[in-house]
Amino acid sequence: MKQYLDLCNRVLKDGVLVHNERTGKNCLTVIDANLEYNVKDNEFPIITTRKSNWKGAIAEIIGYIRGYDNAADFRKIGTKTWDANANLNEAWLNNPHRKGEDDMGRVYGVQGRSWQRPDGTHLDQLKKVYNHLKNGIDDRGEIITFYNPGEFELGCLRPCMHTHTFSLLGDELYLTSYQRSCDIPLGLNYNQIQVFTFLALMAQITGKKPAKAFHKIINAHIYEDQIEPMKEQVLREPFASPKLEINPDIKTLEDLETWVTMDDFQLVGYEYHPPIKYPFSV
Image (cartoon, rainbow, N blue to C red; front, side):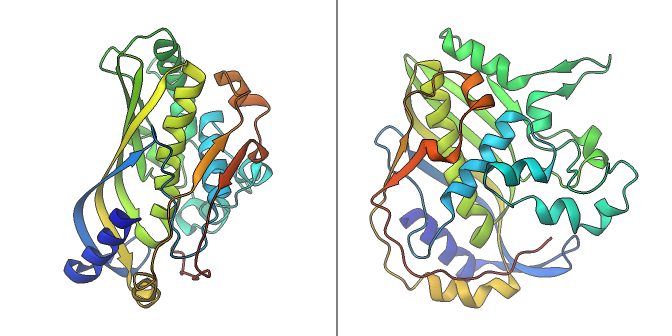
């Protein structure tokens, strides 16, 4: 929690007010933030200064792993995070590539599981990395990226956290995740959980030991209508980090693709302050 609160206070103190054209809102902004998560010792990076919907965050990363392109599929596994961008984003609603209600287009997991080559065939980035890691291979390019500028017009939103690089040192697995844009009150709450959980899951299904995850953010911001509740949140005293328990029967990528639900994840020792409602910007 300390590094999270340090970043919040940094933005409140040093952030520059910038107008964001997509949302039509102003936001306090800093450039470059680096967070680290100790997955080896299971120090789960959840916000304790307010209640966090941690299962929704994990459900979203499971949806990416499965290559979902529809908000309804995300709702089925326990998160409504894509409802607004799929159905309330004016630019996407007027996009001729949109296939109808709940369609997200070719974003996030679609790119990770079905990157389109020039010849029309598709590359499964995640499966390539999974197969390499479980066989002890690190070619210095164990990269999964959702960032495909050639297909931005085919999706409802450019990816914020866009690239994940896995690295092996012996039998220890590391993850470095890159994020171009981060809404600190709402987005980072989910993103830090997802970086941690992605490494924990990939280590478990490849038979490696999880080590450390590095989370690199370029543009970190707090929207103008989020400033006052954030000032309240940073005054609260954080609780100790809880532990994440993952069903040990999850042993393969196919398991994650097929039968895993949110009941396969439990949080032990999660204490938190009362909820704080933050405005969400589409």
